Length: 270
Image (cartoon, rainbow, N blue to C red):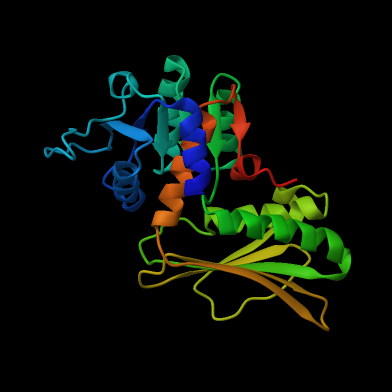
């Protein structure tokens, strides 16, 4: 991904002005670290939903407002749905590109994001990792190949601080299963379990979310025919892979017209 990002930058030869929202959150802090190490970007503003009286790398964080994003070429947002929609409203007026790593959107909110993407380029991904996006691609292929003879379910583990469940990545993988079967994902969503030791397969896709310790992220898709089980999984060890993926997405988005894009578009998975 860093090689890809560098190639994109050499074509531009000009630093990308970057704004990071939710700058005091886990991903906000990681994005700041990664952006300061990446010579392709210039950090121009930081925002947070509460007043922060200290400067971070010489920048005083502010609330989300047009002034905060005025000098930005692209905004990277890992916050909460309400905040993301507030940012998109401002960004669409200012014609700013937005990379969204926020998860937990309702169907109605997803439709609002689609509407904003008619005005500005937006790249939205429940997970910015190359490996996870490959896992989603493989999940879709497996679902298509195995057909209706196999039932499926999704298991995920995250740190105890993560509020939403199932994770955005788990939902992405569920969509991969649905796409493979050529079915509507929302019609296939089954039960959503939290911290269960075991959970059943069903005709729909059941999810089990574990919240414990400081686990960065584990995801597993299981397909069962009753006679055999196929498992596809991915484990994350370093949060930097998400922030580096988001920066790659931001650089890629610079050359795009208004529209809603995903990491799959960036990685050119067919």
